[in-house]
Image (cartoon, rainbow, N blue to C red; front, side):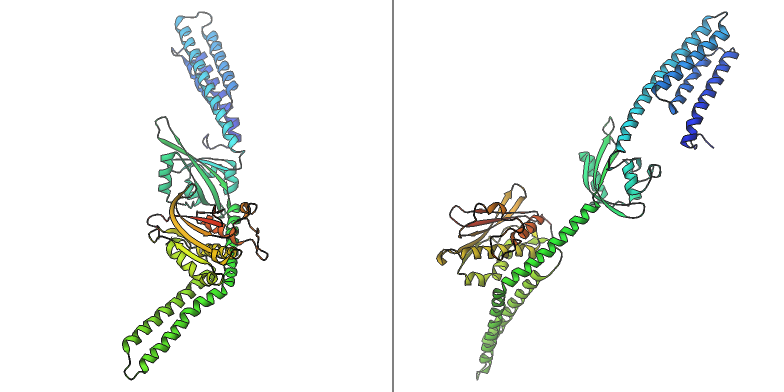
Length: 481
């Protein structure tokens, strides 16, 4: 069995004994032989062996003992008639032992300081491990052992990505390029523990370079956020459920408008059908007029079908699907759903949405829900002013937002009484409402939807009277589908 194969406990006993044996052997050879060499120089081996079992002061003590043996051996061998040669060899040996002891003691002090600093890493609750440029683990702290289930001695020398079955949020090559460029990387990773349990961690990497600036090792710190992500996912599902309920409630309020929107093209289909029959019943059927009425029937049938499709989309319960959307089409489709509400409440609607605006990235159904909510709220607010002053306008323009960057801003302005100053700060708070039968969730859900799209929604009073809602939506990146 080799020395390094011994257990730490046995090595702690064997190392001092071996050093003592070497020292006795050197002393014996130096005392009983008459070699013309500085045999005592070999005591430096004893000093170096002391690095395995003692500290700074212990190394100096061992060195002092070796120097004492050197002097004792000289006195025994050459004390009666000292000659220049043995004296010189004795000084050389003492100098070698002294220099070796000082260097070894300084090294041991540095090693001890590093060990103390490394032991501090075992006190943190975050998992910390170090790996080289080849992803081979060189250090593994206590928290990592507790989270992942592998002991330190089982991980050192193994590749981290293979050991933990790491799932990266982006190609690993791209992550390494960013790390080498900036020296740092942050993101979420999915790791597998020893018992194959998956954990989500917030990971932070730091790159260490040598004196020449070449990458040497990577310090990775991970914080287990599995429970936090589970809570956030559950909260997201709850928000989706609440948004779905809100859409259904909104559709209930728009029942009359929906019925009118569907009945109008169906009535046109019937009228065109009857007209077509009359053209066919003539002594000489007018086929051109009949073709025209049939084409009109098809257009109106498609219009009714489109209404049903939009309503089914609003009522469906599904995950968010974001895609590039035309703001002009979004506003046009939404205003069609509230057309009858505008007519019943005698509200004049004007829209100024340029067709050449860049598309925004979002979920059509959810953004329609936001616009419907804003339009219905505005219509209800306008009931309190004279009919000839009930004006509602929807506009859009490209702008730069401080928080969201390049955006398309949709403005919904009304000429109503405005928003009371004490209400304005709480307008988007959950369960806050000024309506007698309101739930206080409409605008809160609107804010959640807009923020989930990376945008912002805000409200203010207009100087000329009325309220203005500002909806900022990020422009879809080039190439988005």
